[in-house]
Image (tube, rainbow, N blue to C red; front, side, top):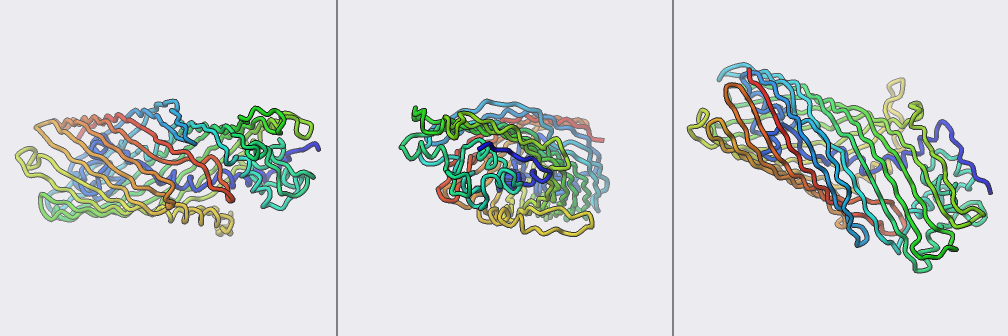
Length: 513
């Protein structure tokens, strides 16, 4: 039977099944701290310390410690590499490097011991998505083609209906078109999965995944803060993050049995995915300073309300060794990415953040009685509150969001709320300051089988004299996470454990006025 893939204006809607995943919510909330070189050197702990422009992004009350103006810029360079383990096989991925910008901008403060006021405009790279993950292994248990068969079988459609059905994912429709999955009569399922012939015969399937991602979140923030009698410091900031995420994925399965007559040789699924948009959020904070030595801070970050647009193009090539009279079939590229009228628009609400922090300022003779400090933050992140919705319609009404219920329910069951911890310190000697710090992010997955965390450790040196500011920091971030190449409902899912290393050099230069 000759098969035709029908392109229609609504086809892009089907990509939701494949493009919006629980990982999308995690990617926008499982973020490492970025900031000035000073903040990075002390582990990102800026919840109660203040006196740094990066307070805009942690606790804006810290801006109220400014009594003068400051302009600062924080360029940096990141070095990325990763190792992945999959089915008892370890793979080192190619390394990648990229430029980044830490917190940069302007703060202007004025006042005296009776009270201060400060305003600030800053920009920061809140997230860096650059990376390369690659892994492969031999699987005698399952095939990614089974996920396509499950979706087709659950649809209740015939093959001809499914090929033209915009409610099915690209992968499933292309798997049908290339005979990777089929029904013996060409009608309704259950579908035959060609790689399953290898598994039933006791053979193995070689599986490989290659994922290259780029982009990030650049956030512009406007902050304002004030203090009374150097005791209470209050601040508010409004953030406007801009998202640019791109990912190229190639997934391949190959028959390792050596049998050229089992209706399966290989298949490769290639996909380009982009997500772009912007959002808005708010941060409200307070710092209480009972004396010269102690500072206690509390900040609440609202969710970021994103308006995003996703675009996807995909291709599949399957070699079924003469099945149905054909050997190798290419689906052609299902690509409506160039047609903005068919892209998928949606809204995403990220988690709430609550930051509790404290600082101890050591007394001394350097710089008006201060010769160093220790500071710590504890941050609560409500990842399970992440939520996908449709944007308001042209009349300002909220559409029916029941379409997103399965995804939102999966987020609630797949993840758990978590904590971030940050700790750092500084010691000053005349014009020089020496800093060290680190952070730790707890596991966001609810399953005991899936493990993820992030650790950073950094150190740096700073120079202050006659209004000149120079800070240099190196930070090493180690992220442990998992990557699931395909999801099955009738079998346990296989997954890769990924360890990513990111080294960053940040230089902050500024002038006080």
